[in-house]
Length: 294
Ligand code: G3P
Image: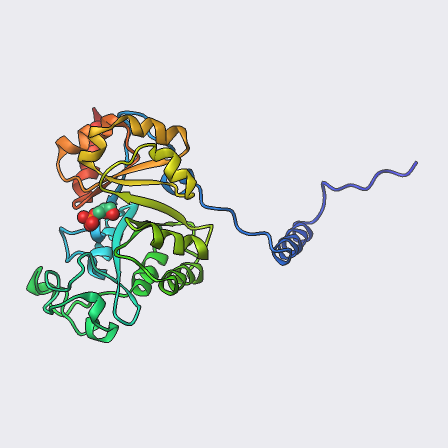
């Protein structure tokens, strides 16, 4: 009698080759990468009292000037799991890290970012206003930030300010793909059109809806546009805390901004928010550790 062929002794190299060929075939068949889930990017939905993830606001604002590479590098060096940065478009359509519509507060220049070219923005000093130690710090491009992020284990929330163009959204998505960052970044915006432009370029990248107020039936609204959750101000959330359960039940996440005191952290943790944006991530981590230690 002929024994059936054995498969348990296949050399490892053969198995690796078979898997490699299979992945090439699947790729050639055009199987798209799966959409990033809320759980994958933001973790499991928190129960009331459970520790929320921490996101350093504007890359961190205490150790270095906000939305600059020194701030981001310090946040990453300190081991923060998420950084939140703001991106605005220059007159020639480049995304740079900045919160305000004008360069007045955080650089030595004046005027609207949208009226300045990238070269003009790059000539500005974005560090001296914070401290002479940061004199000469440039306004980073989105690509510079993503290069730093790609060299870390951190995740990021990209807060797209204003209304973007389809071209700028496409460039951003391309930059994420080039650096293999599609699965570690969430794109947030107050502007529905901007989020739609991102979605048009990638169904993979997770999107978050930024809100100052909560519309009725928020879970339905978020699901309808395929976003993964909301970024919401504390007061609006505390006025309608029941939305946390509604969003969690719909598989969505709730991130609250921008909280800087233990009283505020305590309140939203008791409500079961999933993430907290803060100016002082180090202090929030210490506070969370204190809770865990009882
Ligand atoms: O987008 C939500 C949150 O990050 C807003 O913060 O920097 O605009 O005050 P910010």
